[in-house]
Image (cartoon, rainbow, N blue to C red):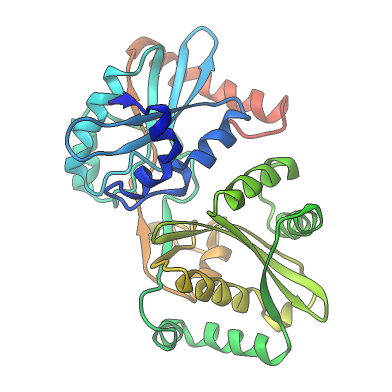
Length: 346
């Protein structure tokens, strides 16, 4: 494992797309530079053994312990057999890091968990990303076949929104559209009760991904009033439902259903083959009491198959420091970030 050269950094995202997993938006140069402004120093590494894999490692300094590394939704391996060589490279280049968090998109099963432990990894107390379980919509079939694969109620709602006059369009990112989108997200937060980071946080990475040709904002409107919005990210043949929000007004016209369908059509026209809807409950926790159940009820209308990944695992580098972090420091860091900075740690 070595640091990317200046020339390689200039085409970093090309390396990410060529990763065995097909690329991940949270491994891009835009995401690394965005997190640099939020107390995480990005390192751009290329493996030299086995398949060539580009790895974005974010590093955060922890007083008294050293550095904590975090590889968001990576490293970009396609199967578990490709991981040991990458882990060896990470250990060799860890520097002052006492541990590195990894979350490769390897599907969850008992054999995968056992293999990860055999490699010296330990399951993290908490997954960093909420997308360990997700629904991925296949965009490869033609539009009629895609639509036919949706649940009857979702197809009905899409057509209902069209009949009621809802329109969907990609919109440029500017101060006005960002204010509108954040208001939609805040409205959803108030109804659902989840945590929402600041408008400045979202604005910064929306603009970075849009400038990199990796993000697009969409609005669904009725009579000039914006009812719902989606910010979708995309890289190579993959895309993600990154952020969304809606107003409770005119809920009966089902604008979010038509919005997602038009986002899928827009992505498909640009060669995207898979649209990750990002966060649903794991299959074993699929009850109405789960905080993500409402999202599942909506997203499962487009596909019922839940994909579950192994989630976040810790690679200890310095055992004593990692033990101190795991026992006390991580909880304290979370509390400090939330109470003092009014933000999340990761």
